[in-house]
Length: 496
Ligand code: PHE
Image: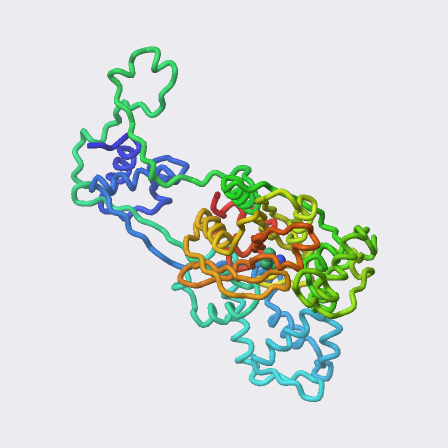
């Protein structure tokens, strides 16, 4: 029978009481092991050998939260306020006395609790209804909290009314789902013959000595079970976002792209005018853009300012009519934190107008957004362009499809969209768990953009969100989790 010494040891332990349902604690004591990994591993092998059956028990543990711990030491808020109330003369049981005795964060919620127990407020004075009901309810709650102060309990063994009451209050109790197992000998296991029980000489580690001694020729080797449960090693590892950026970087490099970078601080000219974003565009106002007061301006080559002025005012030679609005060069010189990495790709074209290029960059951008589940004021974009004589829309779409399928999202769809700087413009969605999720924008730069840059070739361009993609890959539903320094949670995220 293919069972090793650990399995034999566990079997011997279980035969000491062959009809018992063994818990983890009992087995640890009986085997003398101090690591539950041995039990999980041997138990699985014994189950496969038909000697043991494993039963899973699901339950919910209830323990005290931070507030609960505090309440078990100092008393529940309603209990403290109630005993204060009883210690006061009736005429002193006023809201103002209460607020001077208890801190504001306790007085407010405390009165709420008492009201729910039947205390009323009559012209500023607290009046108790049926005292015995109040007292007995407070006692019941206090006992419940105290009973949990020594150790957690299984939810089904507790007063359900109390559980649901305290679940509705902040920080008092914590409910945690848990799975426990018991191990029981099968009929076959109970009658395991003694030859199975003795330790055998098996080699678990191949050492240089063993190899030199020739003893390995006759040795019996312990099989490895690569599926055996084992503790997750917790050591240093790259932050998931760093790992993800590395992965994206190697995909674009593999696809023949070169990487470019740029500064966080840019002029409004390069960040927006170069992209034919009208100077009156709402995205340029303080709403979305972080303008800088120091330095208030950055230099922009006069040559470009002139070009952008012509293109914006009347279209210059691009065949466009422009925006028909007066162009303000001072506006172009304003300094800001870049709002997209598209500024890097247009500057790259301006610096290399005659060289065909396929470049990408992964960089941080800044927008005045309120922080919530899906928004951050600082985030990353995955930007790229294909700038060459034959660049075209199918080429753009297939590049993005290739990228996303290498990232593990084979289903990509594009939809018509609008950006002031591309025509056509397309939005890129990927299919995830049956839903189409929008991950970025792309298109072909308009002549109003490319002409001032000095190129006559078409440019495929895209700007994709990194954090949204990270959320899909790491299965998060709140973007903030990516940047919280919670080592435990970070340690649990998949290694990419
Ligand atoms: N810059 C756009 C954004 O920030 C994305 C984009 C890039 C769109 C390139 C078209 C072309 O959302």
